[in-house]
Image (cartoon, rainbow, N blue to C red; front, side, top):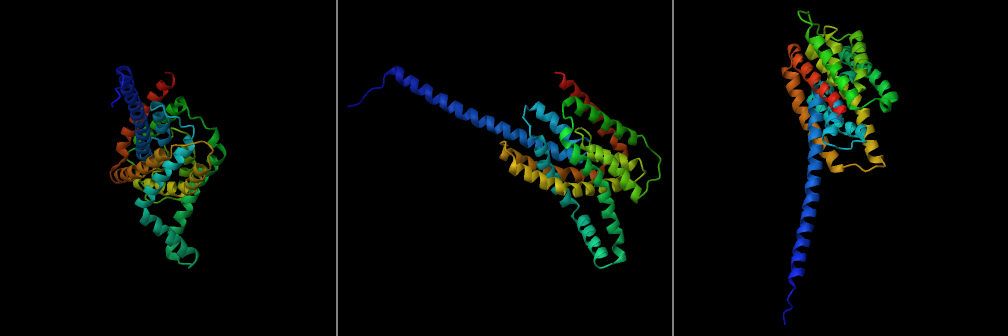
Length: 297
């Protein structure tokens, strides 16, 4: 004998199922949007790490726009920077291989023909020592609010505009010991969120009349050198952190950072010229002002 379900109970059951499905779909959609935000942040990191517009400044800005709690911003930066580091390592693999091989031949086999490679490696080390020391002692005390980021972006734009104005110069193709030291001193300030590392090293090199592509090569190779300990430290902190992080989000951001860093360095290294730096300068001015306005909203 069939038992009929009362109409009220039937409607209640339907409502209950719809409610559960809505909640389930809502949770899934929320998770998808959260992951999508991390993917976008990874893309932003990949592009802005290479172009002279500050990756740390953009990540701070977009974390605010996306309302993402990046209390572990330092770790997120380290992880996504590792993606950029691996992309640059892949792009400059022949240069890195040549420098390692040349240094080995000079130090171990005493081959004078490899002396230039060895000296170039030493110059790279000279250029990264200042930012390494400065970062070690002060990275936890740097301001990362949007007002500070906006001001730093304006400064980056100002420096790019300054070197853009430098024209009719006989550019040099060699990087001297003094050049390496000065570039290293400039690069030290890239630890401040909003100061572009590639932008500040471009400025340091171009102010010394070094040809742009030579500066870019030196800048990116020095980034590879400094990224080795930074990447290892980021991996260690990610594995030992007591707070929970979005593992999938961080992983996808890492992948996007690698892909878009590789694409960006191909574009920048092949096509950028000193006369094009004005566009990056204007962009930094706009984003810097926007960040400062957003700080007060």
